[in-house]
Image 1 (tube, rainbow, N blue to C red):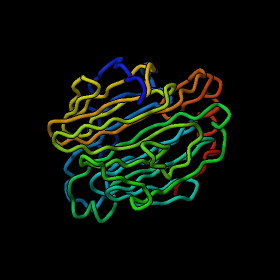
Image 2: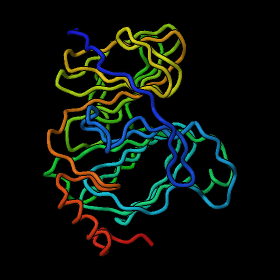
Image 3: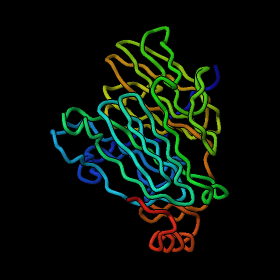
Length: 286
């Protein structure tokens, strides 16, 4: 089974809004400290009530370079388009994995029909860092339908769904540039599960809903627990129903230069990104 990891920190996400249509919490961001390495950002938008509108709200077109954005929809629907010609609609359970890499312009908004009808929206967006050697690779887009994501019903109830990497014998469909695990776990009342993660991976657990116990420590909705790299296992239990997001990965031990939507390794690369964006070298979104 292996040694259980100890917890290094528990943090509470702070209120956050993005654009004119995404309201929720920010658990961490790239301008902060780096214990979340190789992850850069976690925004949890929702659950929020979207009022009916003929004009879909969200985030208008904006650039990214040097990392990947991962959007996991739990309720509601989103719509994406970008300057590389990719277009997608995401519904409950779907995941969008966009590799900005050398540069892309995209927009994310409420899906048109969902916007017209209104309803509850709940989704997470992650930013995942890229190794320096891959930051200038061509942009890529993975549209991952819920039906493509391996899900296991656990012996004590609840479900484990693996989006990227390998966990508990399940393999996620997402293609990644460095070894990571992205999974969500639903626990039912009184359930306990022990999971094994490689010793050298950073590991954190974010509570999407409900509350849970991680290796003896209580964590509630909107909190994220970070673990030390001193073991291979974590045990999660709950006395209520809970939904958790598990993030783990091999840290990328390289310098970071961050400014807004650009995450590179040096200040010079940030200036180059601004220049490329301003001169249209990241493409155009009409």
